[in-house]
Length: 212
Ligand code: ITT
Image (cartoon, rainbow, N blue to C red; front, side):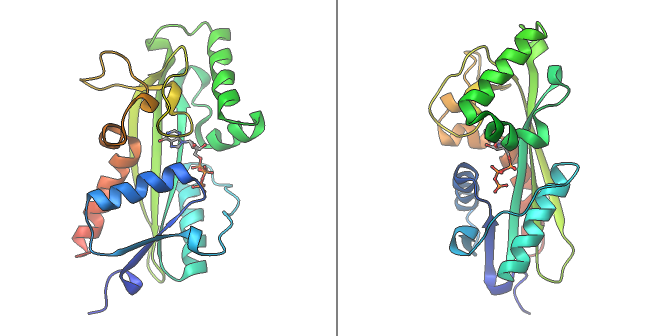
């Protein structure tokens, strides 16, 4: 029987170095017997993300990469959703940073908007990260896997690890009494708690089910 994944290879479709590092680490941690490559090895320019939600956007990216490479491709669409800001920046998380010039400015904008709303307590600053992973395999139906991580927006940036909005997001966790942000955590600790890991666990189950 031919392998479930063409060339026994899975290609990670992203132009975001932080995501790529985390997804590669997840594949290494779960030790699959497949080749993991990324769209860095191809002439890949991310397509326009004009979907209405995370799932539509991850499908757009995975399908596009799979057509380009003729390989099984995993794409990640993710973002930070803040209750007091009606779920923003949400699917526009990357765009906010682009429009503001960088992530520091985007995080400052979030602080400013929350202050304007007088959202000062942890409960008022509730937020969650979402990750939707899409798996596109040539000539097969596309699959989606989603994970969430709940927490709140801190009052100042903290930590040098991770990427993107990690310095202002404090995940809820039994051993996070001292309110560390994702950027304060080592890779392994973020990996366990993260939205990306939760989506990845579902992807793993699917791959194992198909004897990958
Ligand atoms: P690709 O589409 O090429 O994968 P992107 O950066 O444009 O890269 P998205 O459209 O999914 O990716 O945007 C997600 C945004 O949310 C992006 O700005 C990330 O930095 C941020 N983000 C996603 N997961 C995150 C995490 O675990 N920690 C911090 N920020 C995160």
